[in-house]
Image (cartoon, rainbow, N blue to C red; front, side, top):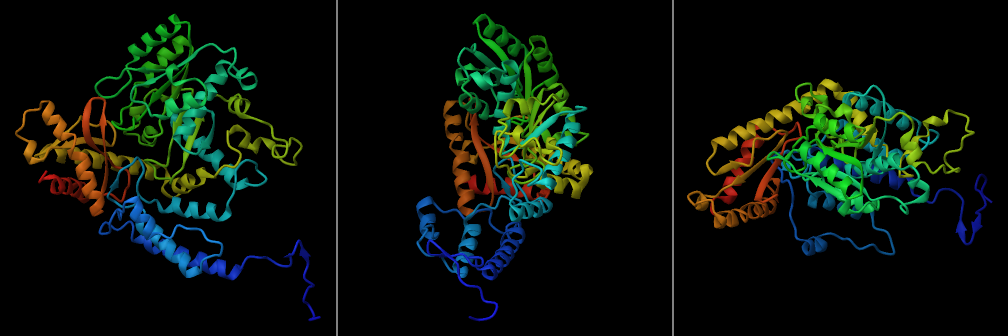
Length: 502
């Protein structure tokens, strides 16, 4: 036998000596893939001269991509070609002319943080397996709680604002009737929650998921700007009580999805305090205005809330997903509500302070270290840099509004309160037409047709929707600091160019 060579050990016909993985080949693949990411995503996909998207219909895209998984593995070259194809045919959300959603752009520090966490592959339930990231989450939550205006509080990062809203809803219900955790829904009175008619659809989903029922979500009327009317809230609370139901929660919104409206939190808090109701604020979109001394007034009164959902992956570009649920309570209500005390994870006789094992406050077991990417950006820019990012987005939105007012064929839906700029494009064929039913029917066809043209051309991406009786209009949202005044001009020029002959 060759000196130093070990005798092969077999179990069930499998050789157990040494690692099975080809480490050198794996390292080379990662190195080549990172080079591809740098060239095709970080550099090329953020170039304003490149396309935002390479549109293909589903059947055609299936033929262009090799999606089948086979019995034998592919070569490294084939895998790199697949990576390149995935990048090529994906929407470049970090492109300066991607305005389609409430997230956009590339934050380099957040990206680096995401690469680190993907490589380390941590799960943050206990300090023993994720010491750094649990301390990072603690520090970020503390700073966010300060931004809300609370002296102390609690919180947890969740996979998106919808989950944060659902967890807040469940927490409010647990506070109202703690027996539900063990005894379930049987024997409970009919519970009612109140939210704006402009709220995010996650409120209905959460009510359905939690067994509250969508019929027990009372939608409070909004004014012409999309803000909840406190007087109607008060009226509906009394009405629910007269029906024999039990109100327990009010969900206000700071930054509605379409119009970017901010509910009057101080007045809503007064109503909640009078009736002993939990006040949750869905600030998933608008919460980032809290870092701006100039614009935080939009959320005046948020310190009176019992819980807040805030997504740094939106305006502050922390990268999807990055969503925090902040809670004013400091009596361990989160843990009491969600703890399952799994003894294989949360042993109480560990050699360190087990209060740092925060995973039992979450509905998840495995949980990503989402706070780290926001922490890295915050460390890099400082609060002043985050503030500058928010203020610039507001300024660019203001510029766009002024340009819309100057240009023939463009009509604002309303003066924006946030960075949501909603407007119609009226092609020359409709400009002399009276604004009757036929005019609005024809106008409703314009935005979808222009959207199709821009996507097939790949020049930009912009969202549109009908909304509460108003026919299809464009919703432009400014987020990324890579966006310039020239991009605002291009947006309007391109819409006019694509829609002029309609």
